[in-house]
Length: 83
Image (cartoon, rainbow, N blue to C red; front, side, top):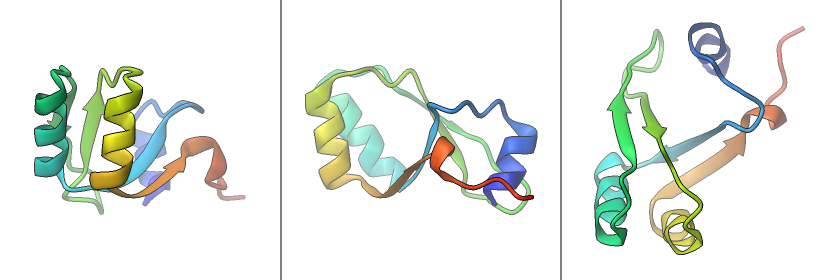
């Protein structure tokens, strides 16, 4: 799946992939006053894919998201590329 995203999107080494409930993500961001943008972006093989844009470095928000919203998280640089 990640291979498809790498072909179609500009995925950089500092990018990350996570599984989350988009509604919960939106609610947490609104409560914190963050202007994070969530964009529905289905891809071939991942019809529920969404992009999270303009995530800032608000450590309180990031901790809340880690505890309450994201169920799995991995940095792009840690995902092996096919040979």
